Length: 158
Image (cartoon, rainbow, N blue to C red; front, side, top):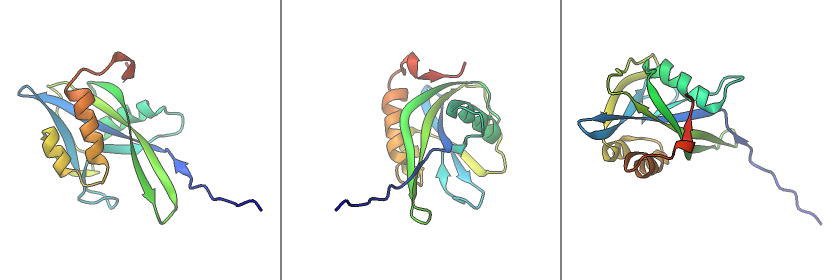
């Protein structure tokens, strides 16, 4: 007798991006306080949807511009992923995480999705992020993007 199994679907319809900026010789992480009904008042890094015809890294660049107004950056894939299980809809959501190094002169201009932002040290950011798993992503980014220069083959975009 063969057993039947149900596979929980995995969806990858979005991206996440951690922005880094050197301030007074130390890399800081940009975190946002969500203002919309989804995750309201949660502190997190950038997240967004991939639009039809976009590559994931192109969505990351677009979301950075939409949510912050920032256009000058070097973008890398981190080889990490945000993942969340939705018990209501029974699927696993996976999003590739990108890392953007921001030019010192770039200012943040928030859109409607966020009510506040702050530049924090990695340790402060790890303590501030609200979603389980975000802290592990930040620890990996610290090791591979803050404490050392990332390999060029991880760079995307320009």
